[in-house]
Length: 380
Image (cartoon, rainbow, N blue to C red):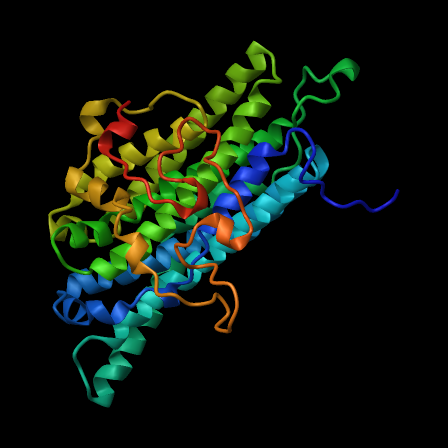
């Protein structure tokens, strides 16, 4: 069998091209955000706020590390079998973005540990011990490991072909592949985004604003990738009969429920109650579960009265206006040449992105163009 090039001009590659162009136009690195502006705010954090933020960022890095490895491998194998070509390029871009996110979380953790206001060697050693303690806490946290295991089980399960796939329906999508797409969207839009509450809550109170800029950049990437993966999932559903679509619907809601309760258990291991945030965290989890399901084309799981978190937090998370001035001009790799991390138009770097085709995409826009979102965008 001859080796072939991925053809970006084939019919049916528009969604892949649009997603890939959007992702490349949005490329950034954590070094482009000056966390030194938050130094005084970091030093003013209470011990409980500092420890909670450290645990949150370690937890987020763990989830995104799984996404960049197990999820990417599974989705890439599915794409290579079912839709080889440009879809694989988009998945590579998603994985690269997730790798950037894991690095960003560790930049935030380092900033927390390096700006305590302490100067003697004993306190520096104490901070290092605290970082190691947070790392160990993540590994030993049963609720954290439970939700990761739920995801990994989906990613590593063998192909599950529909019983309706007879010889005359050989081109129907593999149900295992659809399940993995659904799991990847739920992992990003439910599990990862639920970890964004505390840093955006702090920013809504006028503190730790540069930390929040990092979170907004990550959130923008997640909106883009979730919109893309959700649209691929919905196109796959269109090829199934009604009975099989209902089977998939029930599966996705069961998985969403399981991940929701695992994330809820995990949130109980964080001292949100001591910060007076436990009730709103519950609403934020429900809000993100509904949003994740919307990417997959499904109605809300939770009613509006229990899924409306603090609007100051959601407004802060979706406030993209500041990002145009947030990123310092810098080449991704520190040398001269094109500045992929800048807010220049996509045409300046050889792309012509258009907005993603998913109707649920509210924050992912072409050519790195900022677009405000509001709670109304997620009014279920």
